[in-house]
Length: 427
Image (cartoon, rainbow, N blue to C red; front, top):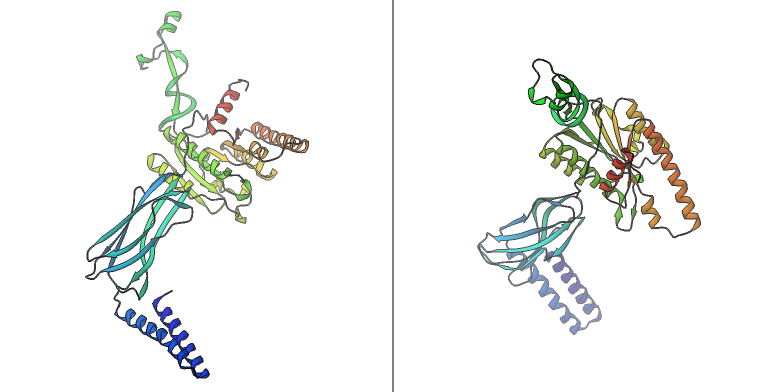
């Protein structure tokens, strides 16, 4: 309670006691009201004599970006720049989604002129962007009567980025590539690392490409031709519609999808491709395709801020603004395709000339773990699996590459199974 409110409360209480004593004509009751009047006047005088001190506050983070659930140290300091002693009690703002795991985010005590008090505590932040904008506390008069509430504006930001794993091979065949060298096989002869075939030597060919064994057998010069490798645009689409995701225990499928998207982005950027990102669900959260480390930082920050959304405008997957994607580019869609209408969208995109890779987060094993064993649950699981198999098979026949990802396992495991299946190896 502020000093003025305490003074008013004390005065009203004393006045009430005094009126009661006058009505009852009892002097000893009137005497009881005197301490309240004295205390009220003392508070008013104390508040008038209490000068606002000059304070300078600072908040220093050990890192402005950390990985998800990684601790960050916060050092809070307050300096008295005035000529008089100051008695303070200040507490730092703790943003939603963070928790203090060590230390205390508060300062209290006496500060002499030009004296600085500091305190260090440790935060652990969930995925996202977290802002600390102010310090709140109280300033006490030297004799302890007057209390002045104080708010110090001090804004700092902490970005908690998603953790992702380094992924293995992800084979894509985009219909359009750029002229710059990369890691995408084009199926055409040119500069590359893998041999595409052989042909007869022509005047002007590089003699370092001569296949001497084939030349000895044919009794003429034969050279190797290599498969052209180029860079391409990879656009990652994360389905952020809330009804596409669930939480069982501490496992949130949306967090798993975000981490998988970060891993996919890192994989294709390491191959010198240009990678873009669309978080589909809340607003038009679009990161334009680019290459390099700076682009990876942009993508990680966009994924850190991604949240499941219930916006009606993004209720259907067919509303994806395809005009943002270059014709013939590679699309990587991470979605569970909740309805039959959604399930047609990847095939429609493939028909429009895009190369489509669907990462299908299969939540059946996760949901099954939360259900009791029984005949009905096993039958329900079998029916859902049959429906999923029919949908994914139809998409594969339409030209969509599908990775069926059991979310109870690592995404790398799903990539390994998809690679073995593509090569004709039985699981």
